[in-house]
Length: 448
Image (cartoon, rainbow, N blue to C red; front, side):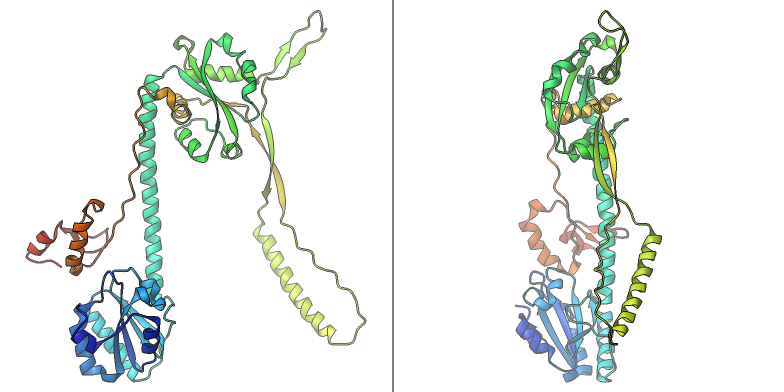
């Protein structure tokens, strides 16, 4: 459509690898206007390019519009909206420019054309190779993405903590007399009758008990405000293990659930001394009902920098010895068997991790977090379901001259585009809002 007439006379229209490879064989300076199919070539530059070609270039300046989506050499530019200009000579790229700055483009073409006609040498790159400005843009982009991800993650965490606080406040308000005990994997459900023995004197009642397999996400929720969380190395050993959890009712007159349940945990894990009786003349030490579980894990021992230097020096020495050995082999010598070098094993050591038999949070909020995570059925009468997570929001920027094409897109995808507007630049730190519709934008007495 817009490519007909003067555009065809001025520029070659390339849409395949074969056409592209053939065009690269031309002499002189080749200027490639690279575009994505949905965006179209930068036709606003036609008049300036025509003037340069007629006045300065002639046969020494070759122009082409290249469809990135159908030319494999230009794959990295596909689906990009920013106008891209690549300068090529002798089949190699020598420069690249992005944007619609007409004076800058004209000056660059003039400079590149003059140096090409003078047969000056250029730093050249393969067509598929990233040029310095692209590497800089990639670094800036990656840094910006990293900062954005960090900001998004921090905001997500803030919202999550805020939500968990409201949820646990609700649970604490409705279940102030409830606490949870988490037993280690060494305690199974068949032991519950024995575990109930110390509960009776404390007048606490187990209203529910279940066995759960815990996950990192679950315990991230449980520990969001814990005052005495389990050590990370302990939690790591508990993943995918089945843990018995009990839902206890503690009468208000007895004290807070954390305090009473910690006394219960003490009764389960303490040694008792049985005094002499008619059957035993001496005291007998009775072991705890439940004891810690010791797990031995193997860990890699970090190599000190000095050891690495020594190993490097040893390698250099071995290389020198190899050179001497090669020289010696050139002289006649009796055959001898050389020792085969054995691969050096990385230093390893073991560590013992103690998994407690029972964990009782010392704060009421973490008990509420355990109820929220593992005993949701107990909250059905007062706690609403979790809200559906918001879908991710994506921000896209385009040059304002594409407003007509974008207007059609905005109308057809209105439900998927919550907000859009015109700004003075694409820099979120400095951009100033102009208008929130094409009509208002066009009505401005001056727009940049």
